[in-house]
Image 1 (tube, helix red, strand yellow):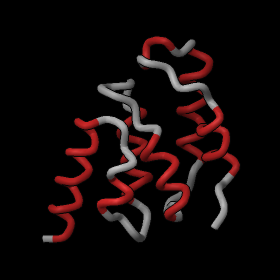
Image 2 (cartoon, rainbow, N blue to C red):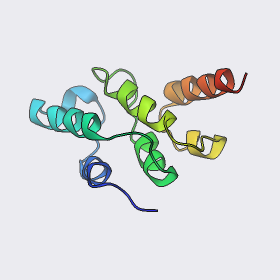
Image 3 (cartoon, rainbow, N blue to C red):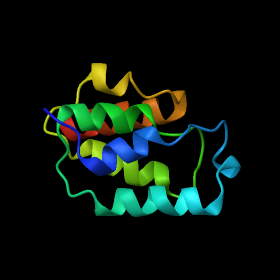
Length: 101
């Protein structure tokens, strides 16, 4: 499978320790790229985005990423474990459990 240009661009942006460390222009670029991605994601794309979900709140970008990840046909523990944020990993696991019910 291949990555869409938008996912590659998001992946290439240097990761900061806090969302507040991004200049407004970078934040806007990420937001625009996320908005232009049409679901569903393939597993490789979901793997990239889930690994980039920031710790804590990031002006809603984290929810945009989560919703895109959840559009993937295959969501499993291995995918969710790629999330570097413990809090968001727990949210994803809970949402997966609810979806399976």
